[in-house]
Length: 77
Image (cartoon, rainbow, N blue to C red):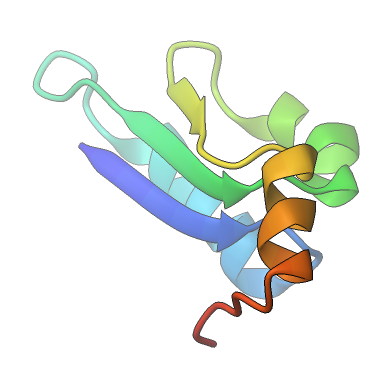
């Protein structure tokens, strides 16, 4: 089961997502979280809340994010 989120800023949906990650039956599902843009909130608060058996994939590091920002690339809200 793959869960994808654009970023982890503070907010209720992130806390709900953590609960979903905890709830899946590991005998039936392998669970992975993909995060498009890492953030201080993810690193400092949410990463520790992700269960240890959940894979985490980060797709864009800060350098890549700043490059797309300089090129005028925007993401949809």
